[in-house]
Length: 102
Image (cartoon, rainbow, N blue to C red; front, side):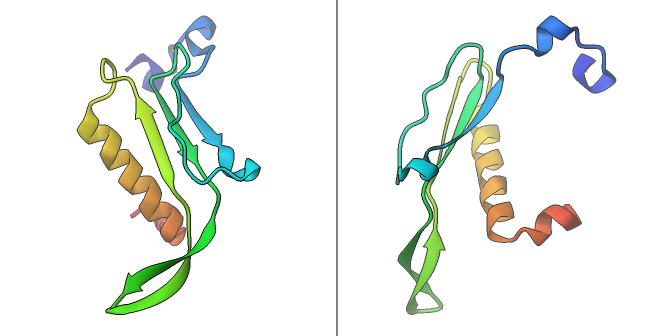
């Protein structure tokens, strides 16, 4: 509530609460991101590679990237975390969703 109202103190905004880690630039295909205090979550993004996938009964090659998220269950509910991760996936697959706020 205080954050939405713009009433947070400077010391309350220092340190990380959520981090995006891009190991893909170093060639990482998949990893488990590790939380650093005081984070409540971290999203790991990995290297994009061409991979075979099934589409409409056919095997096609598409650019694919693994996402991995770790979160503190004392702070974040699992359902909310998975919902967030699915939303990130949907927005990466169809960036127009971001513009249209779908």
